Image 1 (cartoon, rainbow, N blue to C red):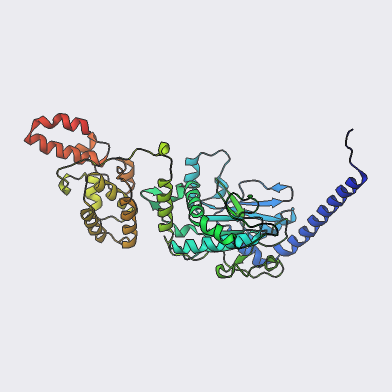
Image 2: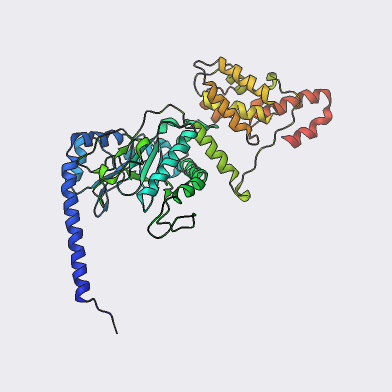
Amino acid sequence: MENFPSIKDGKQEISHSFIKTEREERIRKITHVYYSNPEIQKTILNFSVNREVCPRYFEGFGKRPDALQYESDILGLVKKGATSFHCSEEIWNNPLDIKTGMTGEELNKLRIGWDLLLDIDSKYIDYSKIMAKIIINFLEFSGVKNIGIKFSGSKGFHIIVPWKAFPSEMNGIRTSDMFPEWPRIITKYIMAKTKDYLISEITKLSTPNKYIKDFQAPKEVMPDLVLVSPRHLFRMPYSLHEKTALASVVLDKNKISDFQPKDADPLKIKIKNFTPDCREGEATLLLMQALDWNRDNIPDEKKTFEFKPINIADKSEKNFPPCIKKILLGVQDGKKRSVFALINFLRSIGTEKEDMENIIYTWNEKNEPKLQQGYIQAQISWALKRKPIMPSNCKEFYQGIGVCFPDDLCNKIKNPVNYVVRKNYQAENRKSPKNKDNFKNNN
């Protein structure tokens, strides 16, 4: 026999539809009152600068890309039915220049940075609180002191480490180009390092029927960090949440345990800054440790070939290529890229650690202004933990920092290390022509 909906089922369906309509109508009324507040409009607009912004309606998200230009834009969208506002973790030169289907390289040209946004998601807000506190403690242990946290509007939290906290370059790679790869690596690293403590702390709590004892527990119970993806959006600070009608309020990181959803009542909130005024580069150590951890956890079949240093007899500066000699005179622009070039060049030709440090620190004294000693120490320490890699090939990299002044020998090589190899060969060949074959094998 076929199953037809009963009268009771019909009543339930009508009742459910009525409740849904009533809830939507109530939230729409709240949105008009809430977003009419000039302070709310100003806060949302200020956070939206250089970000892609997308309003959400009950039917779904609005068009992309979009951006806010005036405070009045917010209420204008609300009058059209917008209930919340979401924005990008990525920071763009002009968000409106983004087009669907752009390549990674095209997006890199538009992107000027990204925030690390940790999205904690859980069925139970108490579990999310535990995870938020553990992550903040771990970030502080890693040297990141200025951290923002806000309520998601439902049962989770958003933690932000501002773009300013990250180095502009790491080993010659522009950090702004490494979205979403590096934020994902950092997120996975944090998850791996806090997992055991998270399990330990959550086991101290109980649900009505069970304790949560391991990561095999149902996903709807265990809090998780949502991994980022290209053009990933998150709810803006002080935006409303459609399902709860609560505001995504900013919290004091030391008062997470005391927070209750009622504190996010949109008609009773107090405005706080979600993005702290952090120290420039304070997340450098966190990024380095995350990249180290990722490298150690890459499956063997995915690991790339690493250059082995060449045994060069004469490593004196007279055999250095013009670009390296020019760098060693001191530079005004491109100091961080120069550190990357010097470390990899000196290690590739077999320079001892103490000699390398002496060369680089002496070079830094010639710079105006000088790089912070802590930055140089961190770069050298990070490099020494892994096998040497070749410096960047000739021309573009060195032209970019204004040190490419090729001589006749430069036209015969592709990498600064090859220059030193040829110089050594020439010296040896003058002593013993038999070394010609050995030179060909090394070059």
